[in-house]
Length: 436
Ligand code: NAD
Image (cartoon, rainbow, N blue to C red; front, top):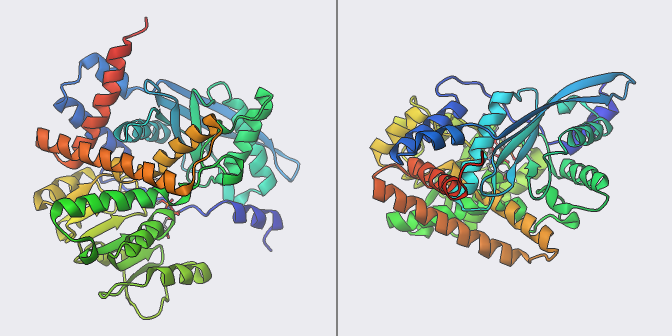
């Protein structure tokens, strides 16, 4: 019989997605390779290269908690600040058995580049606790969160390090972090985390932000390629927060979303799926599987469908050297982090596919996190229309800057996005100088 406490925990922690360990270009190594490529093209000074490759701070802490059974268990918690030259570190906290220091270091660097591409005054950070949250009760998770927060409190703060939700953490966990931090400070500090419930200082528009950002850059790319929005055929892999929002907003703009998928496989209707209906179906049945009136297809088949826009919004490493040649989309908008391997990059380039790279395409989420931080600090909250307008402005500007960089240096959009980001962080280091 299942433990009722575990059942309760499962309802507040979203289930982990499949973690896949593939070796064709480990996504984090691939990210660092792209960093190297971009740094070379920028002729980055060797000293700055060394500085930007090294995380500023790494903290490893023991997190002892009392289990409901009365036993004490000790978990390992990590927080890494990669670079804070442009502002406080920004980046998620994950609770997962697969968390390692190396992965957290790479993800923190990824956040530095993502924030710099969209020109936010933030650096990059990441953290995690090595644990299996699905086997913990809500009370155990709360104790774990609060003790982890207390252990890393010296680096947390609205001016130094601002966490957000990530794999297996959510707005409930952010509320506990905010409360623990505030108790230590003796007053309420909402701006110490983002991704909080709206009632306690979260931002309107945050839930849709990443998918909305995908919509904005996709429209810009369609315009560049001379494809009318209403004629665009779209395929979306992954129907979670990012994928379902992108599909819903793109359909609402008149695009034809012809296929979507999730863990259970895909559904395809060449005339266009009724996305609000698919969303209703999922609310009741959890997965797209069984959705009436559409053909079934596998995730692999879905990636190679003929379409104008492919939005991989599920997992890393789905577009590889094995299937890149077969991809027929004209535009790939990377909703997920690291969906394309470095080997596949070269093939997509050769085929002339217009790739909107992850650090640009899915930066809408961190952009609205920035808005949340700004609103918390100002104590003045914007309506959703204002949030969406400001998000669009930032995404359009970043898209145009990446494309201009790609044209100027005759490189792919991906390398251009890294060049833009590294250039911005490096410029800050040059202006600030080296404190010694
Ligand atoms: P989610 O957990 O809400 O949804 C993930 C979706 O992927 C689900 O529909 C799931 O069924 C599907 N999926 C899982 N395994 C699959 C498989 N093997 N094949 C096909 N589909 C599969 O996650 P999310 O928040 O939408 O994040 C998706 C991706 O976007 C991740 O790479 C995440 O890091 C990235 N991302 C998310 C945000 C955000 O704001 N949520 C921001 C930036 C980047």
